[in-house]
Image 1: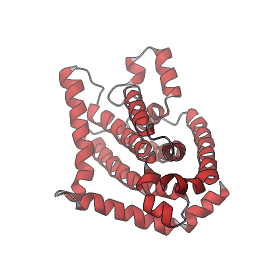
Image 2: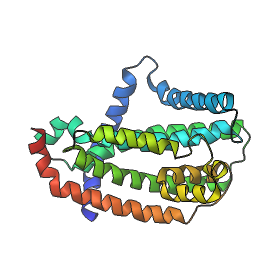
Image 3: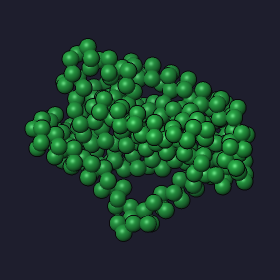
Image 4: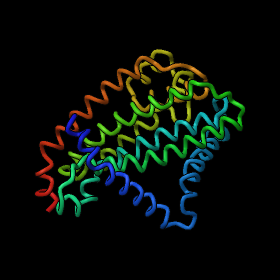
Length: 260
């Protein structure tokens, strides 16, 4: 882990430069450019509002904020997990021609997605003001939630990045699993209000993304403190990161042979 921290410092400029380049290339290829960074999450929010409020005629109080928080956290988690499977294959030219710690490639992706996530969080604060929800000092607790989610997601991404080199069908498997997890993460419904108490508590503790979304809603909308289980997920995330780093360091020299 210490070597990995040193590696991050050594390649920090490369990570920033690559992240900026990827962001510019994404927005430069469209007519609305950077405006899509705002429009995408808003369109998703309007879609879920229509389905839940109009079709099913059920919604939580302040539903636009409620669902937008869920979309923001899910979007980061699902996109990083999805792209991690093919990140080494997508960077074949870099991997086969020069040495760079392979987790750095995933870190570039994570920084791009973090930037998009913070744009969505800015929109959340605008929505809080529009709906006249009081903003307390509890919003500062959002930062540790994001940090723990980042560590956990990045660790899972490193493991998937490793196996993605060898298992061609892993991308399809991950896509199916993410679709399954989506419906059990409370993106557009409240797990505690919609499920029996026992089932709801089990789901919130067993599904990390559902837990992170619920914690974010608690600190932003309901002015609550952090749950002790955030510390547990931090420990789990650090363990997963260590496993992922060991897998990559032990096998990164063989990636070139597989890709050629």
